[in-house]
Structures are given as structure tokens and as C-alpha cells.
Length: 127
Image (cartoon, rainbow, N blue to C red; front, side, top):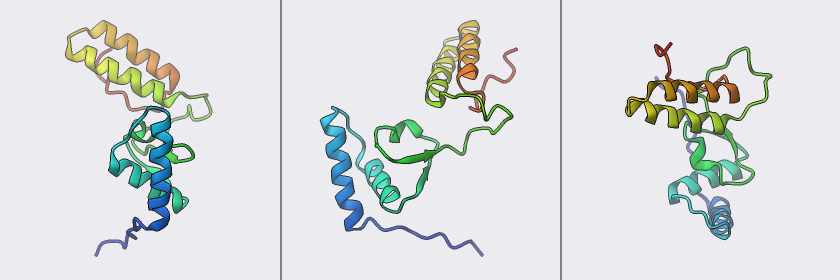
């Protein structure tokens, strides 16, 4: 009834790479949750693209290919993008909305759209 989805193991190759990833982050003064670094290692040793909505959780891992399928595909695909910057500005805008600072939130959403018009913003109805 359900499609067969392979479950990839956390094997010796992934464990060795996991150690290297954690050491590299540590040398940079960064840390990552154990499960995130294990997931990153499994994806890398299998030469896969990691699809996640939480891109920021995995950006510290060098050579890890990431995709966010929660991003709209629009006609702006050829424009230069700063997706992480747009996501960060969107987070700030949502916080401003919670504080009732609507005009400041609108400005943040507008800045975010300039960086990457493909991000889902959540500013519908603020016109």
C-alpha cells in the first residue's frame, strides 16, 4: 500500500564521518545536536541531498547538499538569491508581528523578498 522507502543505516562509514563533522564544528567553536550530525553524515556518505525545512540546522556542515522543499518555485528562479538571509528576515518579521509592530514587519518582509522571492513569507493579508 505504501511506497517502499529505503532506511539508510548509521554504519561505520557514517560514524567515522560523523566524528570528523563534529570535530570540524568544534574547531570552529560550533556545536550541533547529535541527531543532526548523524543525519548529515548518513546523507553525505550516501552522496544524497538532505531535504529539510530546517536548513539553518545543517548549514555548518561543509560539503552537505541541502534543499528546502517548503520554498515556492516562482518565475524568479534565475535571480541571485540569499535564501538564508530571507529566512532570517522572515523570522524577524514574524516576531515583529507578534509584538504588534505591523509596519516594521512589512518592511522586513519586503527586504526578505528582495533577497529571495521564492521563500514562503506568511505576510498574506498585510497589504
